Amino acid sequence: MQFFQQYRTILVIMVLFILNLLVMQYTDFDLFVQDYVYNFQSGKWPLEDVHSHYGWLLYTGIKVGLAGFAVLLMALFALSYKSSFAFLRQYRRSFACVIISMMLCPLLASMGKQVTNVYCPYQIERYGGTMPYVKPLSPYPASFKQEKRGMGFPAGHAAGGFALLSLFFVSKHRKIQLLLGGAGLAVGIFMGVYQILRGQHYIGDTLVTVLGCLLFNVLLFRLFPGQQRGHMYYKTS
Image 1: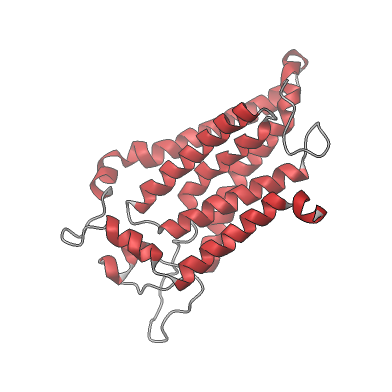
Image 2: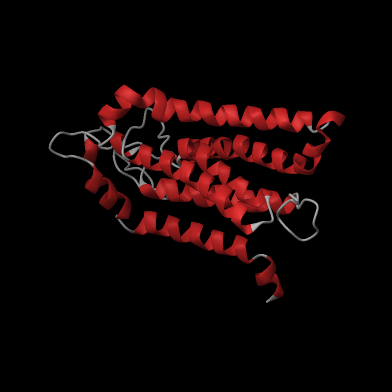
């Protein structure tokens, strides 16, 4: 019982992660959602034209914004070592952990793509592509001659946004936790839904990513528990 209480959050996230994989593997929920958003008459995705005109802002722009935020945190982290910015020292570990999350979450998602070999929705035959639809844990048909590996699972773009879930753990104050964590979650959801509506990812891809990023951050902040023993947050007052 003590073990469960100590690692309850981690265990719950892992169970949800596994359940999501099982839903992806043994149901057609991913296809159900994509069938709903895809226009079979026009052969287009809802945001296909939007992306062609405003992708510089809604896709590239938000990535640039995240990169800028990471650079800002790096600058604040560096300034925390200067005596004139001594007030930043109490946030040093928080800066470091958020930076690590923003760097490693997208990287781990990209590495996952290399292993899973799953095609994006727009690439499969069902939605006008040329590739077969294969679930994450299933092999491709023996007759399929693969020339290029699939890079659709997990959702790499959304990982950059869901990495901001790390902001939840930088404070011990519940209101600040909810505000910062909610902001990070909102950014990730926007990036994830944007890709779903472009046919780049299934909803299961995005759910795996958010759970994976959340698990990563829980483990990260347990590894560096901050100033108060036994807690995953950092003293901010």
